[in-house]
Amino acid sequence: MLSLLFMGFALTMLTAAFYDTATMTIPNWISGVLILLFVAVAPLSGMGWHEIGLHVLVGIGALALTVTMFALNWIGGGDAKLFAAAALWMGWPDVLMFAAYAAIAGGVLTIVLLLARKYPMPSHLESWKWSARLLKDGGDVPYGIGICAGALLAFPETSLFLTASAAG
Image (cartoon, rainbow, N blue to C red; front, side):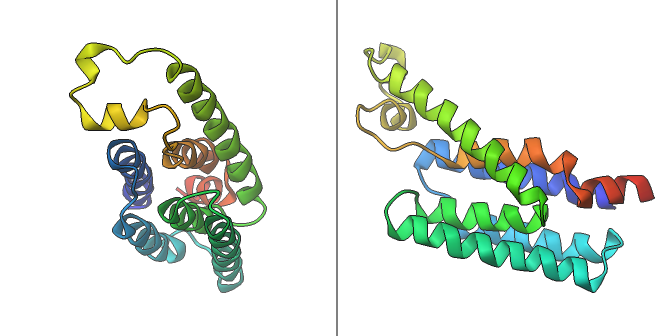
């Protein structure tokens, strides 16, 4: 059962990256699904109330930080909610590795897009709205991709994943 819920986490993160790439938005339901999946995972993984509480505090702290970043116009609102929902899964101190992976992946993505935007778009991509928006000079960066990459890289190293995997 836990492995299905873990797969649900990964698929939901990939869905967020897909939506952000295609539309430059991350629907609220994606963050909601991540929260609901965590609510199902927590008791099945053998976490105690103290550990569940720490995970919730990490999620709330991440939301406070990312909402501030949104208010400063550094990230989008969907990115803020997605990061916080994924941080809920990471807990403390694993959220730090998640944040580092997400920052590195987002930085690489930004550099690749900045470089790609210096060249004319291939004609066969011009008719696709998502690619035109993605490669538009001065356009936004779908940071949900970086958040997804960070989450998928960090999660197998978290105490939640390692403890649940060892328990079997």
